[in-house]
Length: 470
Ligand SMILES: [Zn+2]
Image 1 (cartoon, rainbow, N blue to C red):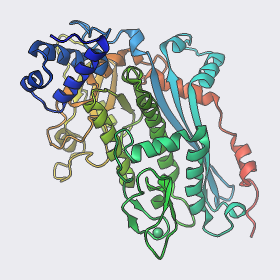
Image 2: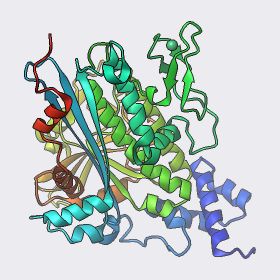
Image 3: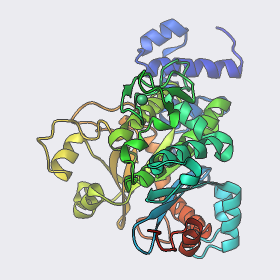
Image 4: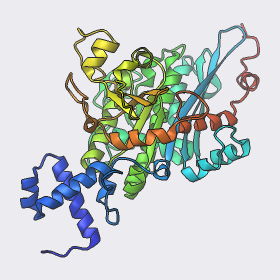
C-alpha cells in the first residue's frame, strides 16, 4: 500500500471524485486510481454532504445526523448579499430625465452581524459594517434629452455616452475589478480556453460579429465599411435597448442587473484565482431577486451556467440562491401553499421542487408552449420552501447546465448545494419583515444609510431644474 501525505491523499480524493462526478463508475475508479471500493463509497458520502470541502484533509466529513445541517455559526460564516436600487429624476417639464443607479455587495460575517440588534439596528454599527464590508458602485445615466455635447460634441450623444459611461465605470471603478470579472466570465477564463466572447451586435452598423477575440478589451467591427470600435462591455447588448434620442427605461435596470451579477462573479473569481475554495464553498451568495437574464442578456445566462457547471465538475460547490419576491411564482406560492403538502407530523423546512412541466401547466397555464421553461433565460431553477407555518419563500438555485427535460428538476441532487442552502435558510429568517431574509434586510438597511443625492441636488447637478432652452 502506498503511503501518501495528507495533502497527496486530499488531491487523490478530489481527483477520484471529480472523475466519478464526470461519470466514471466505482469499479473503474478502483482500477484506474488503485483505491478501494470502500474508500470511493466513503468519499462519495463525504462529498455529498460537505462538497469538495468534505474531502479536505482535517475535515472528517459530516457524520450521520448532522449530514446537511450547518451549525448556526457556519451558516453565517459569510453571507454575501446583493441589492440594488435606482432613482430617476425628471425635469419639471418632463422632457428630460436622468437616472441614478446604485448597486452594492455586502459581505456579512456572523461576528459582525451579531453585534447588530436586528430589531433596532444602531446606525453607527450599520455604518461601520458598510464601510468595512461593502462594495458600492454608482452611476448617473442620461435617459432622455440631456445634452452631453460638452463631452461628446455631437447629436445622438446619449446613445454613445451610455456605452462609454458603462465602459468607463467598469474599467475604472475599484481598479477595474468588475471589468476583469466581465472578461473572466465572457472569455471563460476559469478554464484554459481561448474562446472568443459570445457574439455581439455592432453598435454602429448592427453587423452581428462572432464575438471579440479571446482576452481583448476592444476590437474593430469586422465589417470593412464600418470598422468602428466594439468594446467587451458592448457584449451584453445594452445598446440594443437604446435608440439615438433616448435610452429606453430598461437600460438602467438592465445595467443594474449586469452590475450585480458582476459583483457576484468577481467574488467567485477572487476565490478561484487564489485557490481559496474553502471560502468559496462556505459562503452563501444571496441575491435579492430571481436568477435570470431576459432577452439579449441571456448570453450571460449561458456563461453563468457554464461557470457553475465547471465548478461543480471540479468538485467545488458554489452556494448561490436568489429569493424571488414578486411575479407569477410568488403569487402562485400565495395561492397554492398546498403544493407543499402539510402532513400530520410537520417537519420543517418543507420543500417542493417545481419541474418545467409543473410551471408550464400549473403556474403559467400554458402547456402548449414548445420551449422548455427558462431554457434560455434562467440560471436557477425554482423551489418553494416553507420554513414554518407562516414563512414561505420562492427560492432559485442553479443546476449548472440546463436540465433539458420536462420533468426536471425533480430531485434535490439536481441542484447545486441544495441541502446546505435549505439547511441554512432557517438561520437567515428576518425579524424585521415578514417573508424576508436577514442578510437582504440588513443590506437594504445599510444601503438606506448611504443616501442618494437628494432629488434637488441631482436636479441642480444636471440642470434639470432649469427651464428647457428653446
Ligand atoms: Zn460595425
